[in-house]
Image (cartoon, rainbow over all chains, first blue to last red; front, side, top):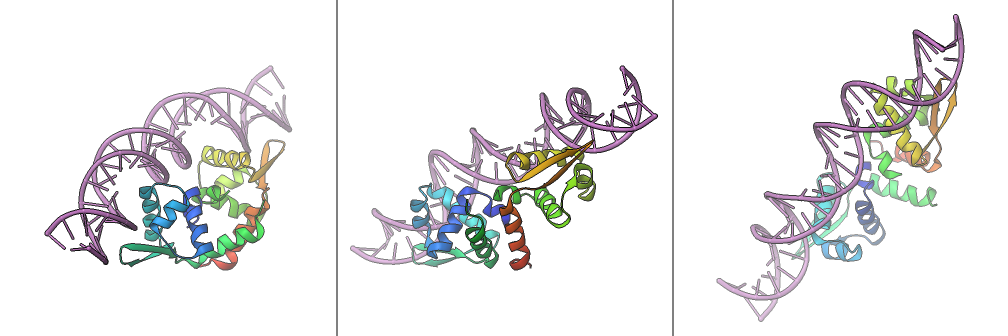
Length: 83
Length: 83
DNA sequence: TTGACATATAGATATATATCTATACATTGA
DNA sequence: TCAATGTATAGATATATATCTATATGTCAA
């Protein structure tokens, strides 16, 4: 879990999902200005680890945080660890 | 910072230092049953990142956590993220 | 000043992880 | 059924990170 958070792109994805709630893949890779394939790979990696869940709605796949621990750690970082 | 925590050996080192306070290199590598060189490398890496500080006392070098954020994240994990 | 002990580092190699390009797959609407 | 759109994956390559072995460095006491 901490390994997931420890990667800059994955952290950005997690923060985005934590802040704005579930997002589809296009929204994620456009917001973060990364390649579609890169986004997709990190997303499925995190889904495989149980960090995220996905839900398909038609042609879109929406990802969201499924591991409460992640949310808590992120919130903790926001609360106590701002430079 | 999160990248440091995201490595199993480094996490163990941090937890050890958080729990038992400053330790010298020998204590660390013996407690964790790892090679001296491995311990030394991770320790100096974390010192370079500002996560740890070291203090030499004669022949021994004692390491401790210098970044409060690390302590806070670890405590947060202990408080909220136990399986 | 030499030997014993503690720690650090160099250099080689191994392993893991990330990224890129291209293409495949899935879904929907015309 | 086909084209358009969104998403996933394969395979090759690049890059980063970790580990190992050996050796260097630092400190002290005899």
